[in-house]
Image 1 (cartoon, chains in turn red, yellow):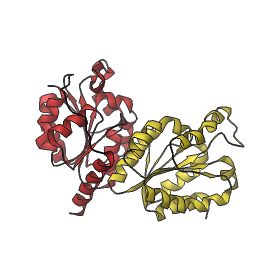
Image 2 (cartoon, rainbow over the protein chains, first blue to last red):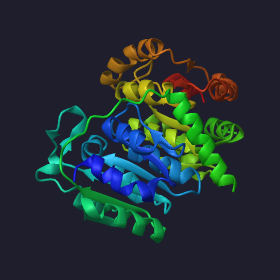
Image 3 (cartoon, rainbow over the protein chains, first blue to last red):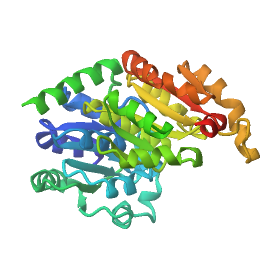
Length: 188
Length: 165
């Protein structure tokens, strides 16, 4: 399975959840597959999906799923100790680890070579770290949501991309409708 | 009231509940005060762009946020300031230690000081420079301006300010 197939397989699990999605193809694929006001699409700023998701989880009570990639986590490696030391049990970090920089032409990342992000996350002090095969991602996510414990999921999948249109929504519109959704859910 | 207490009181009175910090010697006192403040969730960041991501998330979760960092971080965060904070209209007060100004003992700090205001000007970031102790009295208005305009705002605090404070 490649990333777009993983995303398709988890739509039934994440469609109703607050999702912060990584820059580039992951956001474009999620937008094409299942655009929701509860999705925050990053249009720039590689590496910060996990940080934005953690800030959001710490600031309000709804569950948050941050979708990140192996390349982006490598770019913002400092995020893992911050996550480990600021436990938010409404936070799930899903790292779709295809061992490559997918949005830039599938150049290999170190996570696809010797470096295990699962082991790094554990070494940083993250307590619930799950590594799963691509086809088991939906189940791992469901389990993490039900556990109501902060969880890092590292989904190992194949490298590869599909053709997908860019997102032409304005950033302020993405943020505004996402914030309205967050506020409405927290007021319930 | 000490200057550190005054700064933190202004943050709290402006509804700021989430503060991320990357330390600087000049900012040690204010960071201690943030730690003592029950109304603020203090989350130290490993790098300032990571901190801005945390602030952006907290802001979208309904909590006003701020970052405390050194001016060297302007060099680190330009992409994040432009493509996240400015692009999505996220208000972000940045309380910045302005190292490399008069009284600076470390020569290398001057190298970034000479670029600090030029970079902030190039980025169209409203910038305020605290040099005299009394300049802190403007902080409350600066914070209100930041949240009104939904922009990042830089408050440069130099060695003379901290010495006189």
